[in-house]
Length: 354
Image 1 (cartoon, helix red, strand yellow):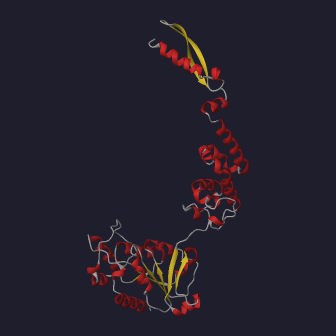
Image 2 (cartoon, rainbow, N blue to C red; image 1 turned 90 degrees about the horizontal axis):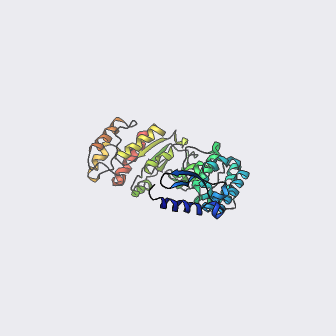
Image 3 (cartoon, one colour; image 1 turned 180 degrees about the vertical axis):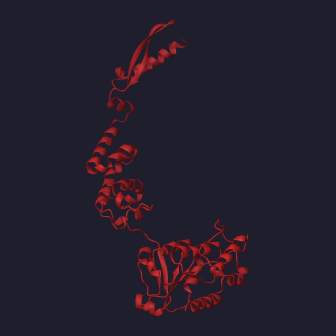
């Protein structure tokens, strides 16, 4: 056997660090073997830890283990439903040793109040006001187990998933009829309303203008300069956020007039409104006449892979297709259309709807 002296040194090193020598750690079982050159010698056959304490002391984790047992016993005692989570995710328990008391407070609150309908910082809990916000990933993991039957499973936003209030998107409305503004809002004619309140409105008007703002905030001036119109309101649509209007069922019996940019995305939004929400929506200034009238003001738009839109009129789809075929100057923005022309078209659209 070559280099036996080196092997002997390693075996002795193993023996010197074993439990038999230092009083804790691993133990070594030896077996005797005969070798033609060196005769009978003892070799390690098995290395093992006789007890948990031997192993924990060897890896210097006794205190952490004791704390793990103490914390897990507390969790199981207070919320036994988390036992399987502990078994599957022990490292998560270790990572949250110092936070566990507050995590359990949050869990117990939601068990008894699965639909709080409060803002996070309103929750009546004796914890830091930022604790939930700073530990959403861990709390989500726990609440998905504990209040599974109450969560909104299609929602990924923490607040929406667990029935909390949140900083909602605001929908801006202009009341274009002064009498209507006076009757409903004490003369206030420009309002921004949280989405959840907007969908439950029921403004008694006939017509609703929806104006787009996809990328250029100057479109707001078109919204602000709409003329006074009887029985009419206007909504600032914010491009593809138009989906926020989806659940506003009170709009279903209104005549909706959509004015967006003349470009691929503007027609996609128009098709989205008609196909998903309000099928009778009319477009305004999204036609060949307007585009060619101000073609010299057009710019190059953003590319899209969408080539077919199911909810456009024949003329609208033809214009959409022609814009797609252009490599440049295929986007006419709302704000490029002169105000007198826009007002004339809007008033004309109103007359056509009567």
